[in-house]
Length: 137
Image 1 (cartoon, rainbow, N blue to C red):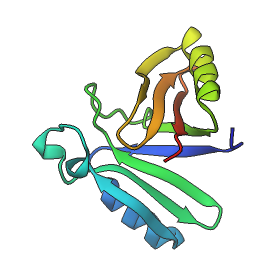
Image 2 (cartoon, helix red, strand yellow; image 1 turned 30 degrees about the horizontal axis):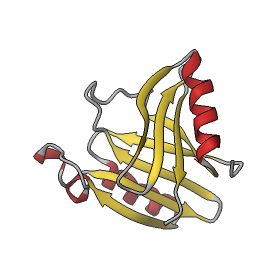
Image 3 (cartoon, rainbow, N blue to C red; image 1 turned 90 degrees about the vertical axis):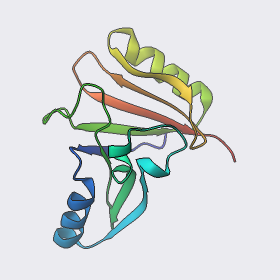
């Protein structure tokens, strides 16, 4: 594991505004913004201009953001997760298996269009973990 958990903030359709706000407050840069409309899978038309994924960086301050695309809708208080960037297929399998054992799988472990293996699991304490292993390109 790369020994760092990165906060992932989910917004209710206003992720772009939030990023601009954080840039104004802290300085720094918005990195790699992609909208749902640019995604390689079908999304509702009302999500086309919403943020699917972006990163923010100012020195050591780093976090990722997205607009909610959950079928359950946006829920304040449940809109922060931790991203673990993993170093091998074996490592992601191990952590996925351990977290789901007494937790809840929110997204099954799967290959993604962004070239990674990914899963989302809520652990037994209610903490949401985004597990990501980027494959060699």
